[in-house]
Image (cartoon, rainbow over all chains, first blue to last red; front, side):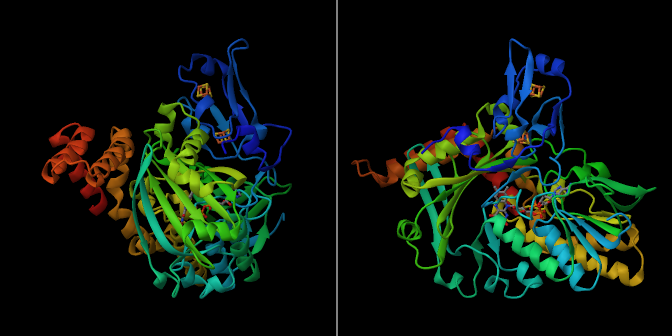
Length: 94
Length: 434
Ligand SMILES: Cc1cc2nc3c(=O)[nH]c(=O)nc-3n(C[C@H](O)[C@H](O)[C@H](O)COP(=O)(O)OP(=O)(O)OC[C@H]3O[C@@H](n4cnc5c(N)ncnc54)[C@H](O)[C@@H]3O)c2cc1C
Ligand code: SF4
Ligand code: SF4
């Protein structure tokens, strides 16, 4: 009964803003980052490092607003605020 | 909402905020309850077990009207090995009357609880994020929201903004939780027919059960949980973020591991995943509690790390702290003083309450977990326990005395020698009885 992350996120109702509430402060910091651990610990696969472009992409529309990346990034390289009032996730069960 | 002035503004409509708002509104204070979600509960998840005591102090016999799932009559702890489990549990019909605790779901529960505060007169301001604390010198005088003209002024601001508490940081009562002060939990709500749940878990009618799970968390410090609702099961796992950072595993992969364990797979077979979710849990406990009150402000619930991780109690501490802050606000309004001198009464009340006593008792646990090697406590020991019991119960012609020796060897080897085993035992004892 294992599901892909896409299937999982499909169970949540999102209302995405057109601007991201998550901002990478410095892509140079990401380039220098040895662990790139945001690529693993995020429960909704928001962050992905792209070798060719040398950058971390941020799929903020998928964010479930847990807060892990804000305190998990070793250099605190992620500026983290809540989506605007009424935006972001809405759970059905909770 | 430009020129409105309130006796108190509460930020966050989780259990802590709703308890505070309800307490104050009932006493006639003019209260605003602000929540960033589309409705209270929209952003919130928990295991979850709701306890009778504490909430009952606020709303007598609340269970006759609150949206609860099942009355818990059976609680177990499962220590998992790779393809095995050691189970310890207690079933008792006496937990029904008076009821001890229930399973629940936050979307319904939080809406109900905030609704009680609204009925008592609190002004709901939802779909609104508080972005800033307004100050006049040292004194907190209100909040700024992301609405147009979104400034609200009040004599007292109560921060009930949960574990992420960006506002606590703004106030400067803490910088940022360390990765070893929080766990990340992911959870699924899995639908199964009501009757199937009752048959699989040996339950009748509204009876429910809870299972806490140790082991099989990819060597990280963490706990799994499986709770029965009316026609769904809540299954989840929380792991310490400091361990998660090192492990380089996806949080949902840990959950998938549990779902495939033979003990759990059979319980959820045929179920449909209705919702995936994730949330942080404060784990720092006593040692991480920040300053609780100051000039014009108080902080309650998860925002102040008030969770007893050992007994998975958070909502009840949130409710109690919210009520105590509310009562302090009422007294402050009687005398018309809102400075730290008046509001520090809340800090004293917390110190005298069960929150402080329980969190203090377990303050060593955090160090025990943060200390060194999580794989020992959360992987090697659970596996050793399973291997030991397996051998004890295996009839293979080995004399019992020899068996006992062999069993001890499992623990010794897991701990890394006799001395280490004793040291671990002592540390564990002190942590739980500190
Ligand atoms: C997976 C998991 C399992 C748990 N299991 C249990 C259990 O079985 N039993 C138990 O008792 N406890 C359990 N807990 C703990 C319990 O859920 C929390 O301790 C409790 O919810 C804390 O209540 P709170 O009101 O302080 O915070 P929250 O419930 O987090 O509420 C905070 C509210 O503030 C809002 N908010 C935050 N910032 C802002 C802002 N700037 N502006 C406007 N609104 C804002 C949020 O949207 C939220 O609604 C569990 C927690 C988790 C994550
Ligand atoms: S962990 Fe932080 S610094 Fe490293 S790649 Fe991710 S965002 Fe960049
Ligand atoms: S808040 Fe949580 S879900 Fe959102 S990007 Fe950060 S880690 Fe991922």
